[in-house]
Length: 559
Image 1 (tube, rainbow, N blue to C red):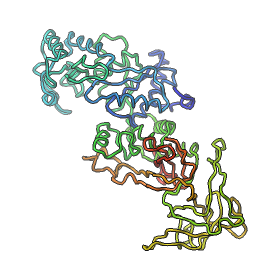
Image 2: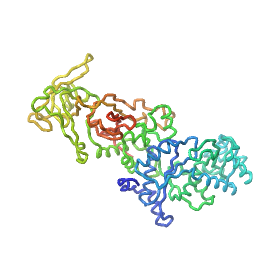
Image 3: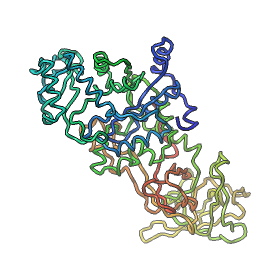
Image 4: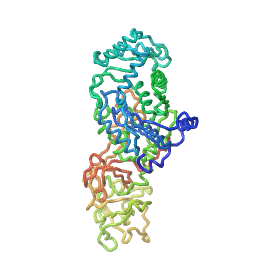
C-alpha cells in the first residue's frame, strides 16, 4: 500500500472477510492472494473503485498480495491508453499492486489447456454461426440442442483447432466450444464458446495469434496460474462460477482458486457501463472520459474528489450480496466531509455586482488588507492577505432594494458585515436602462473591521472581493449528467442526458490569492461550495475552477 493513511484503513467486516478467516483457521490456505482484473477497453469508474478498495484492502489487511491483471483477450476493443489510465487510477486511489499481469501473458498456456480439453473429448470445433449457436442454446425454460459438429473425433478437432490458429478460418466461421451439457439449467454450461477467431493486432502479442480465448475460460486459469486464493467478482457472474470450477476441474492444473460474488455498485444519476460511457464520449455529450460530470475515476479526480473520499465512500457502502441503489448524496457527503477538514478557504463572487464604499479613505475606514486564516479550525494551513479598497464586488444575489425581515443580506437602509471586514450600510443604487441594478453605494461603519460597534448589529454576513486586484476567471457549475435516477434502465439512455448539466460562468470575480491555485488544488469558496482548479484548462496565473460539491445537501444520504 502506498501512503500511511491507506495503510491505517481497515475494511469493515463482511461476508468475504468471514470466509477468509474461516479458510485461514481451517488451513485451506495459509495466505491471501487477490487480484483486480479490468479489461483495458475503457476508463475505470466508481464501480471499479469498490472492487479496487476491496481487493487491495484485503491484501493489506491480511498481509497478502494483490495483482493488477489486465484481461486483454479482445484486441479489437483494447488500447494502451486504457492500460495507462487504469494504472494511473489505481495508484491515485492510493494502492500499489504486487505485480502487473496480463491475460495475454498466458496465451501459450491457455492454448495448451484448450488442447488438453480437446484430447479429453471435452471440447470441439463448431462451425455454427453466432446466431445459430444462440438458437441451439435454448432458453431458460427449454433445453438446448446439440450442434451437428459436437461429436467430431478428437483427431478431427485437434486438426481443425490448429487450422483456426493458422488463420485458415474466417472470423465467425469456427469457434472452440467446451463440451458440457446442452440440457443444463444454467445456460452458461450449455457448451460455452472458449475460443474465437479474431484477425486483430494485439497491443502486447502483436500478430502472433489470430485466435483469442474467451473471458470465462481465461479468467479462472489466470487466477490459478497466479495462485489467487479468493477471486472476487460481482453477482452477474454467480452462475458462471459453475463454469469457473468446471474448467479448473478438467485441466491438469494444481492450484484451485475459488470465486466469490458481491453486489455491484449502482449509483443514482450515473452510468457504469463502459459501452455506454464510450457512446457519451464518442457522440460528444461529454468532454472526454475525464469529464467532471462522469463518475469515472478520472472524471471524479478532475472534479476535485480526493482518493480518501472515494475510499471512504467504498467503506461506507460496504460489501454485501444485496443489490441496491446508492444515492448520489452518499458520495457527495464523503467529499464534503473530507474537504471541510482539508480545503483552504477563499472568497469568490460568481455573479459580480459592484459595491462602492463612499467613505473609504476616511478615518476608521482606511484598511488596505486583512490577514485572515486559510481554515477556521486548522492553523497549520496558515493565513492569507485579503485586500480591500473603495470599489468591491459582491454577489448580485446578496443585494435587494427592499426585502422582508427574513432576508439577511444587504438592502437599502440596512446593515450587513462584509466577511473579515467592515459593517456597511447600503445607501443607494444605480440601474441600467432596463432597471437592473449595476452598482450599490454604501458607507462603512468606522473602526468596525473585525470588531463590534455600539449601536450597530448587522443581521448577516456577505462575502466580497476587491475590484482592483481580483482574479476574473471561468467557473464551471455542474449538476447531474442525467435527468433520471436510473438512466441505464431507459430504452434510450442518451435521451435522459441533462442538456443543462454544465453552467459556465465566464467572468467570476475571485479573491486574488486564487491566482496561484495549482491544478487539482481544492478550495472552499465561502458561502458557495467546494471548487477545484481544472487540470486540463487551467494555466499559470489563470486557473479555471470546477464545482466539486455544494456546501450542504438537504437530502439525507442513504446507502
